[in-house]
Every structure is written in structure tokens, then in C-alpha cells.
Image 1 (cartoon, rainbow, N blue to C red):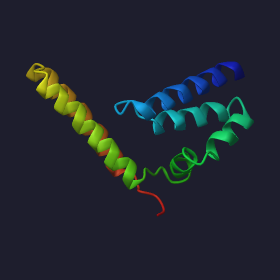
Image 2: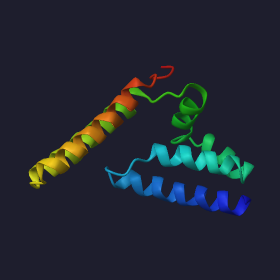
Image 3: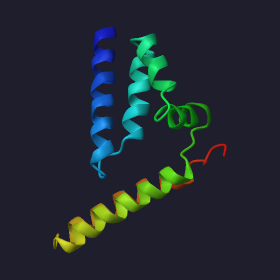
Image 4: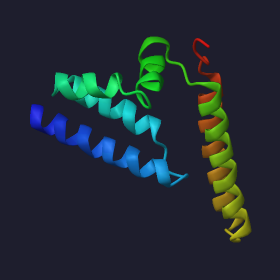
Amino acid sequence: MRWLWLSFGILSVALGVIGIVLPLLPTVPFMILAAFCFARSSERMHDWLVTHPRFGPAIADWQQNGAISRKGKRYATLSIAAVFSMSVLSGLRPQLLMIQGITLGCVLIFIWSRPSGPR
């Protein structure tokens, strides 16, 4: 079972790294998922990820407080607005726009209802 968790963790890190260059793919949620997977499979990989200077603070904020930084919330909101704008500009059917709008609205409510964590 450890190998399965380790595989999911490595896949999550890979998707998170891809998300660094693709603005519509979220990085931090994949890194949080990777930390979860590594906690069940590899103490060394888990320690590396949670102490990483770039990813570690966001993971620690989530694990300790369920928090998302204000900067992260702003970037997520901008990404969501960009995705929805592209959908509108591409001429999707109103029914699809409504489904997408409701879904993205729920995501924004979740994101902005989380604490912002320590400054």
C-alpha cells in the first residue's frame, strides 16, 4: 500500500509542478495532496515537501489552520475569472455557462470562507 501512496504523491507533485507554468492548473492543492500521500508512504518525501521553501508554508498553513493565504485567494479568484471569461468569449451555451458559473462560484465561496492564516 505504501507504494500506491508514494505513486499518488509523486503524481501530485508532478501535477503541481506543471501547475507552476500553467495558470489554470492549481499548484498548492496538488502539493497538499502530495503531503497527505507522502505522510502515509515516505517520511523523507513528506519532510522534504513540508520544509520546502516554496511549497512548505502553504502546506503548513493548510495543515495547521485550514488556511489559504490572501495572495493565494487572489490568484485563485483571478484564475477562475479568466477561465469563466474564456468560456463566455468562446460562446459556450448558456446552460453550460450557468453550470460552470455555479460550480466556480461554489469554489470561490469555499476559498474565501477559509481563514487567511497568520501574517
